[in-house]
Image (cartoon, rainbow, N blue to C red; front, side):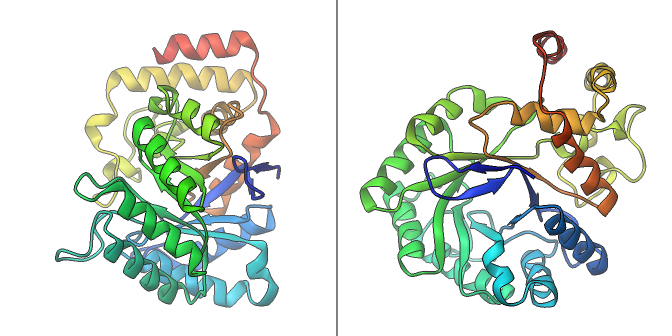
Length: 318
């Protein structure tokens, strides 16, 4: 595993990080989740990414991860891992369980720490910008989370380039620099290239990409349509059947041919394609099995692209 410096900070993150958005909730097999987390750490994945509402049910991924920590990461092993959580999407009913107020963010952080039985998280994120709350209030809550010792670093997620610029400048003034931006980025979702990566580079902020496989689309799972056991068929999933269009399947088939020529699976090539940009610190993968985890980690064996390969990929994606 290679570790990249996160922006202009002292923190190094593995090129591949493990996200607990799926497969770690109360509806999933705990034994499988524990096996995935242990196998990830054994292969150098030191970064585990959560949010308050990950499950389902909301909060259960943090509860399960807390048990995994207790069972497997006692003592000084806590100092060998980076644990992150977020608040910003709906967590509980009523006026204080959503968005970006100081009240919601800080009470949510306290709840997350209790669920995981931790004294602190390494990174606490504002999960999305709040159009109704002043940006200063949200950033002051992140600053307080760090100053109180409940988080070591502050991060943001799903902020556009202008919002990112504003947020990082406020945090800089407060004395708690923005460490990292977590953004949706894949071959099929390229919005970060429209100014955001430039802002992150200018401000010295790290970038971690979530959904790098486009919710499983950038795998060999959809080469022949929508299989029964896929996320597109899962009522709890975030990939809708209409997103798996015939046009998109044709692109997946063509991309898979390039991956074969590189002796990679499509998923491995898709991860390598994101990591080719040096502004990207890490990619967040989800895994439903240890086998799938290992397949994704093997993407690190070939991160180089020829100009011909990049041109061929561009011609398919446009």
